[in-house]
Length: 130
Image 1: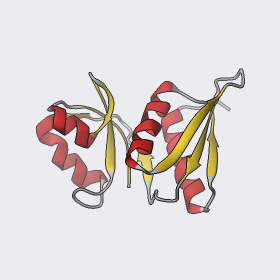
Image 2: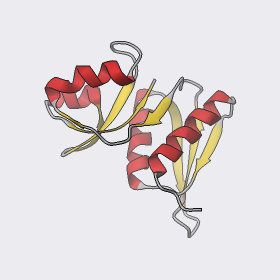
Image 3: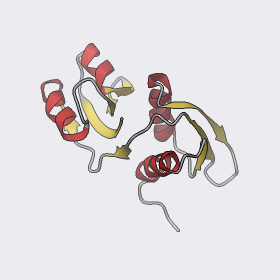
Image 4: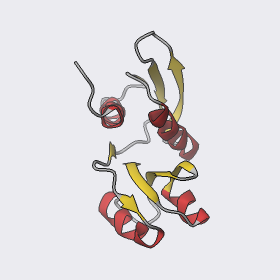
Protein backbone atom coordinates (compact mmCIF):
# COMPACT_ATOMS: atom_id res chain seq x y z
CA UNK A 1 0.00 0.00 0.00
CA UNK A 2 1.35 3.43 -0.87
CA UNK A 3 1.55 6.16 1.70
CA UNK A 4 0.14 9.47 0.58
CA UNK A 5 1.00 11.54 3.64
CA UNK A 6 3.73 10.11 5.86
CA UNK A 7 3.48 13.00 8.33
CA UNK A 8 -0.25 12.45 8.91
CA UNK A 9 0.30 8.69 9.21
CA UNK A 10 3.10 9.20 11.74
CA UNK A 11 1.16 11.69 13.85
CA UNK A 12 -1.93 9.46 13.95
CA UNK A 13 0.27 6.49 14.93
CA UNK A 14 1.63 8.58 17.84
CA UNK A 15 -1.85 9.55 18.99
CA UNK A 16 -3.24 6.02 18.70
CA UNK A 17 -0.31 4.50 20.59
CA UNK A 18 -0.63 7.14 23.31
CA UNK A 19 -4.37 6.55 23.63
CA UNK A 20 -3.86 2.81 24.10
CA UNK A 21 -1.13 3.35 26.71
CA UNK A 22 1.82 1.94 24.76
CA UNK A 23 5.33 2.99 25.73
CA UNK A 24 6.74 2.91 22.20
CA UNK A 25 5.58 2.94 18.61
CA UNK A 26 7.26 2.23 15.28
CA UNK A 27 6.51 4.59 12.41
CA UNK A 28 7.30 3.58 8.85
CA UNK A 29 8.39 4.83 6.40
CA UNK A 30 10.66 7.37 8.06
CA UNK A 31 11.32 10.83 6.66
CA UNK A 32 13.69 13.63 7.56
CA UNK A 33 10.78 16.03 8.03
CA UNK A 34 9.01 13.69 10.45
CA UNK A 35 12.32 13.24 12.29
CA UNK A 36 12.66 17.01 12.65
CA UNK A 37 9.10 17.23 13.99
CA UNK A 38 9.84 14.47 16.51
CA UNK A 39 12.98 16.35 17.62
CA UNK A 40 10.83 19.41 18.44
CA UNK A 41 8.35 17.22 20.33
CA UNK A 42 11.25 15.66 22.25
CA UNK A 43 12.67 19.07 23.18
CA UNK A 44 9.22 20.10 24.49
CA UNK A 45 8.88 16.89 26.53
CA UNK A 46 6.02 15.25 24.63
CA UNK A 47 8.11 12.17 23.75
CA UNK A 48 11.08 10.62 25.56
CA UNK A 49 13.15 10.02 22.43
CA UNK A 50 13.33 8.33 19.07
CA UNK A 51 15.77 6.42 16.93
CA UNK A 52 16.10 5.74 13.22
CA UNK A 53 16.24 2.10 12.13
CA UNK A 54 17.42 1.33 8.59
CA UNK A 55 15.54 -1.59 7.08
CA UNK A 56 16.29 -1.12 3.38
CA UNK A 57 12.73 0.01 2.60
CA UNK A 58 12.68 3.65 3.66
CA UNK A 59 13.61 3.13 7.29
CA UNK A 60 11.62 3.22 10.50
CA UNK A 61 11.39 5.60 13.42
CA UNK A 62 11.06 3.95 16.83
CA UNK A 63 9.51 6.50 19.19
CA UNK A 64 9.55 6.17 23.00
CA UNK A 65 6.42 7.77 24.48
CA UNK A 66 5.99 9.52 27.82
CA UNK A 67 2.18 9.57 27.88
CA UNK A 68 1.96 13.37 27.68
CA UNK A 69 0.34 13.58 24.23
CA UNK A 70 -3.36 14.38 24.47
CA UNK A 71 -3.79 15.03 20.77
CA UNK A 72 -1.52 15.52 17.80
CA UNK A 73 -2.04 15.73 14.09
CA UNK A 74 -0.84 16.95 10.74
CA UNK A 75 -2.23 20.12 9.22
CA UNK A 76 -3.31 19.57 5.63
CA UNK A 77 -3.08 21.60 3.48
CA UNK A 78 0.08 23.25 4.73
CA UNK A 79 -1.11 26.79 5.33
CA UNK A 80 1.35 29.66 4.98
CA UNK A 81 1.52 31.67 8.18
CA UNK A 82 2.89 35.15 8.62
CA UNK A 83 4.04 36.41 11.98
CA UNK A 84 0.97 38.59 12.56
CA UNK A 85 -1.39 35.67 11.72
CA UNK A 86 0.16 33.28 14.24
CA UNK A 87 -2.42 33.94 16.97
CA UNK A 88 -5.32 33.16 14.60
CA UNK A 89 -3.87 29.73 13.82
CA UNK A 90 -3.16 29.10 17.51
CA UNK A 91 -6.86 29.59 18.20
CA UNK A 92 -7.72 27.17 15.39
CA UNK A 93 -5.50 24.27 16.43
CA UNK A 94 -4.51 24.64 20.09
CA UNK A 95 -6.93 24.39 23.04
CA UNK A 96 -5.60 27.37 24.98
CA UNK A 97 -3.07 30.16 25.02
CA UNK A 98 0.46 28.98 25.89
CA UNK A 99 -0.69 25.35 25.80
CA UNK A 100 0.65 22.99 23.15
CA UNK A 101 2.81 23.50 20.08
CA UNK A 102 2.32 24.11 16.42
CA UNK A 103 5.20 22.93 14.25
CA UNK A 104 6.23 25.08 11.30
CA UNK A 105 8.59 24.72 8.38
CA UNK A 106 10.43 28.01 7.97
CA UNK A 107 13.32 29.32 5.93
CA UNK A 108 15.46 28.73 9.05
CA UNK A 109 14.39 25.08 9.38
CA UNK A 110 11.62 23.23 11.20
CA UNK A 111 10.68 24.85 14.52
CA UNK A 112 7.84 25.41 16.96
CA UNK A 113 5.56 28.42 16.69
CA UNK A 114 7.04 29.81 19.91
CA UNK A 115 10.55 29.79 18.48
CA UNK A 116 9.35 31.21 15.15
CA UNK A 117 7.63 34.07 16.97
CA UNK A 118 10.79 34.70 19.00
CA UNK A 119 12.87 34.88 15.79
CA UNK A 120 10.23 37.00 14.04
CA UNK A 121 9.57 34.72 11.06
CA UNK A 122 6.62 32.88 9.56
CA UNK A 123 6.40 29.64 7.63
CA UNK A 124 4.12 26.76 6.69
CA UNK A 125 2.12 24.83 9.27
CA UNK A 126 3.03 21.14 9.46
CA UNK A 127 1.33 19.86 12.60
CA UNK A 128 0.29 20.42 16.19
CA UNK A 129 0.61 18.64 19.52
CA UNK A 130 -0.79 19.19 23.00
